[in-house]
Image (cartoon, rainbow, N blue to C red; front, side, top):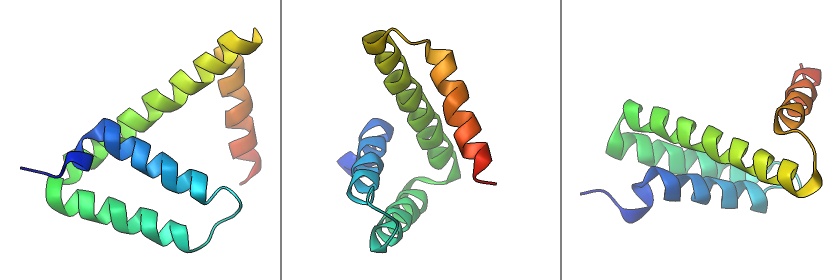
Length: 90
């Protein structure tokens, strides 16, 4: 039986917490995130990491949707803005 934080929903929250701690700029925490993902992959396999990616994408969209509802914006429009900003980084 896996660890409780091997549950994809809880693992997504753990990664989000690590990202929040790192929000002031990349640093040593990126290593913590990689180590955490490595451990999850070793214990649960590649298919689990795919499920984790799906869970994170769903959580991300839910956050955008919640923001859209709170501000009266369009969720797809917010997603478009996020995509453009990511593309500008290339």
